[in-house]
Length: 254
Ligand SMILES: *Cc1c(COP(=O)(O)O)cnc(C)c1O
View: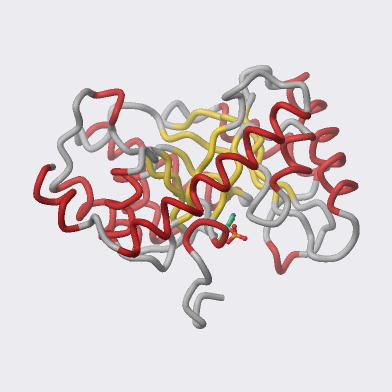
């Protein structure tokens, strides 16, 4: 990547580098103050609405886990990044997860590039992703089943997506019965109103109860730029950080 590194060694890279260091510092401090082992919470950088060159810049800074939220932007960006990426070894290959609302008709595309989908909240979406992942496995487009995290709604507001706690078991059963899918855990987005600590404690309670039934569903994807610390305290295994690293998203971005 020699030439590419040189051309991306610019003002934007310096900016990303500074913010990334700050967020890594916040995350390490939060993990330590929660009494958890170092490295026990992954940092996902959310690159939605930002160009492939920013993903390339982050690769030069050691980032390997990215979150994207919409098609066809995500599929195109991943293809662009992987086309000129030559990893030193297989363990070094960047990983992209889908964190946005899934439209069933986009499942086929998502199953080509996503390691996991964090935002699964409806039987119809499970069905579509299961079928799409099966085709992708059969066509050699992916090597592993598609990971699934069920998005939990903490306040029952249908606008923000997610399934309420009472409906989790049925959805989990549907995922478990599909061998093209692997149930990895739960995802939460804290509601805007109310106390962050309260919502994160609620997330931890729901996740702990869920794991009594689904012991392998170890992932709790929780925490964003504004509530990383509370999420880590509550046992998050993956924080999804956009703004604090990338800067403000373009205005039209939701
Ligand atoms: C955009 C997005 C994020 C990142 O949010 P920031 O506040 O910018 O860090 C995290 N999770 C989901 C599901 C998102 O859509």
